Image 1 (cartoon, helix red, strand yellow):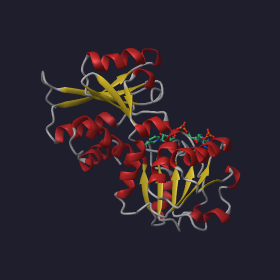
Image 2 (cartoon, protein in one colour):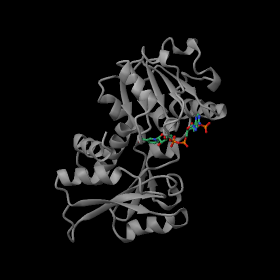
Image 3 (cartoon, protein in one colour):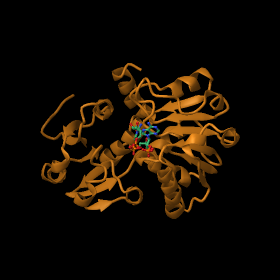
Image 4 (cartoon, protein in one colour):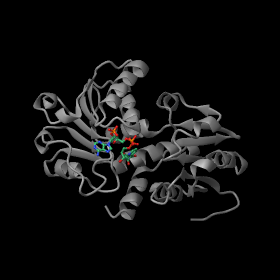
Amino acid sequence: MKITGTTKITGVFGYPVKHSLSPVFQNAAFQYLDLDYIYIPIEVTPENIRKAIEGIRAMNFVGVNVTIPHKKNVIPYIDEIDREAEILGVVNTLVNRAGKIKGYSTDGCGFILSIKETGISLEDKTVFLLGAGGSAYAIAGAMAKEHIRKIYICNRTEERAVMLKEHLSEKFNFKNSSVVPFEEKNTEKYWKDIDILINTTSVGMKEEDPLLIDKKFIKSLKLVYDLIYNRKTELIKIAEKTGVQSLDGLSMLIYQGAVSFELWTGIKAPVDVMKRSVHKYSKR
Ligand SMILES: NC(=O)c1ccc[n+]([C@@H]2O[C@H](COP(=O)([O-])OP(=O)(O)OC[C@H]3O[C@@H](n4cnc5c(N)ncnc54)[C@H](OP(=O)(O)O)[C@@H]3O)[C@@H](O)[C@H]2O)c1
């Protein structure tokens, strides 16, 4: 990679940030397209986040991604927020246009783009959504806009599932969601018409984590999506074994990064190059 006096700077602010895969695929994309950009991981502690945002203006960064724990706490320090990010109350991408910083959330859009690649349309599909945390909000909102038929929301803490249901109704006028009590997740009646299972919980990150959904419900699905990207989860392994189409968290990670790339450069992201670089790096 050639760094010159004109190289434009992007990167990621997080704490910790050392496990981030974004530098791998963003730099691969810049290099492939011969763009004079660089993407660097920058560890920023919560107490330094305001100064770090000022630094974007002071050092004329093109923009950055922000990750845990900064997705919410950068908002008071930026100048503008995209509507989708405002609804979610979080940003993951900042763009610096002539000293004015605008925040975006690219998770929902990245999720939809990754599904489009499978050739499966979300229209009229019924989804079983495990989890009601930050990523579930981004995904559920994005699906509501894609004319999904129904979403069953199932979360360990039921009140959070209820809050997500209300959020979908209020912000997206999406009324066709139901809360499934966590202890009833393997009850036959819910699984009759499910097309897509999405795991947005952190269960599966560790090898010893349990499989939350009974194997017998997986074989009739059209798609299994597990947002976890640090390893191939049991859920994905079972989908592969039973011939059900599946996507792991690397897909969403790359597509949300591709949307950030396009916001910074105005150029279409080379998604295949990004994917190859990550698979090579993580030896998957
Ligand atoms: N691929 C990507 O691009 C991408 C993007 C974002 C996130 N992710 C991954 O998605 C996962 C969730 O991220 P997030 O930002 O949504 O996190 P979050 O806001 O902290 O939500 C965590 C979710 O996991 C559930 N959970 C945690 N431990 C559990 C357990 N032992 N049993 C059942 N449910 C449990 C939580 O349920 P409670 O409400 O009951 O606590 C909650 O629904 C993480 O693995 C993250 O790495 C991937």
